[in-house]
Image (tube, rainbow, N blue to C red):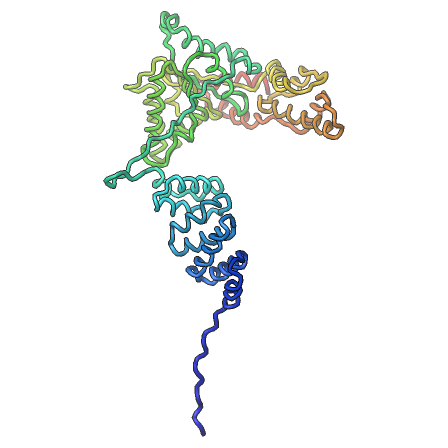
Length: 445
């Protein structure tokens, strides 16, 4: 039997041979070159894909799909510079994973601004992809000698003086009178108050249901005064690094003291002044301790600094913040009464076409509506009139029928808060903190 002859191994066939030949015959055909690059990338041949996609981008720099895929290939190969150069011009087209890789690559190259742009975009798309390593790289910069230093922080407060006054706040006349005595006049006439042993400054805490005008009232009170005003946003105080939140809070108070007389306004104050028995972790307790020290500590020099706080949850505020020297004046901001509701409706309608509408009637039919609820009611009624105007082409005034229709869809949002407050009044009002709430609930069952 004759020996069997083994044929030589056949040359391996290039699965992309046809595409390569087509690209070689029409080298300016960018879509074809991108298709070859994609096929190579999908097959795991990232280096070959990089070569083809670089050529495609060179010929057509604005082609987004080529840039996106080129960045993927470069990232897979660890080619940071190529990835950043490919992705940065199409930042808005990147998915979260690409944005994360771009931020890391840019920061490795020392391109801090590019890294920050990518990271900001990432968090806007998917806050759950927050990366402490990237944030540390953004926080610290390398200076000659190899040391890391923290750049100067951005100002954490808004210095814009409020332009609204009490004239822009509907109703709440008794509260306005009280705020004039507690906030405005002590800052405007310090000598007269000092003669009676009253010093400007201290703390005032406004509390009540959401949407009832606590923040609006605070800004209007500041607008009545010719003093420095700082509105502190809580997210600019809180910091993930140990001890940084306390430092930021101290800087805010120091600036307020330097520019006194000052109104320092904290909205949602429970976020930094929560009751310590509810805080199981150290950072939150340290923040409360820092706030206590700033308001009435041994070294606190707060003459002519008035701290104004607003909260929807006074029961979550640490009790130590409510003692004399801190938030010693606690003021309940209830839903507006009928007169206040009519004033709010009038303000909300002052720049809209209005027919013969009995606002007093609507005010009587909206018990427990907050200011925000009433403004929403006006919006819903306006939309009905606007819908008719779009059909006819003629401006139609807002009528009582529009409000009656809107009242079928809009309900007061304060009810849940008032029920929660009722429980606190019933079981946790031994110190009389919620007496004002108790009187309101008795008058508005």
